Image 1 (cartoon, rainbow, N blue to C red):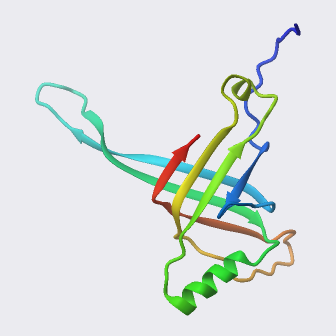
Image 2: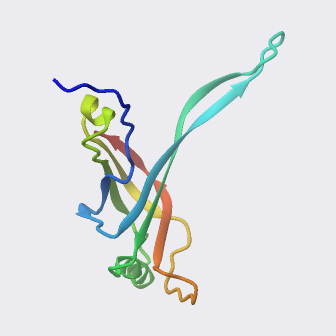
Length: 147
């Protein structure tokens, strides 16, 4: 039995993400943020408000990738040609085999479905100071699944 003295928090660079079921090898950042809707009310005689979740949630995603495939341009072109809103699935997996979390609970996986981009999408970028072309795609998701 080995001795353990050090805490081993999750290192977030040990993971990967998927777009439409295919691994995004050029991804450099991926996040899913969930904000619950809240209702707040006041009651006479109490100094602080009462707050509760009201059943609504906002699910936002953001993926940053080093451009190595034209899938964003293809998504824009498809929309311009068909008028159909692009919708896709994204998944992220934290795979830090040496973390205390994974030792206790296993890999952490989150999938968001019904993803629709809502932010700017870069068609082209040139910069004499730049090094890499990073695409940042952000938007809303319809549902989240945890594994």
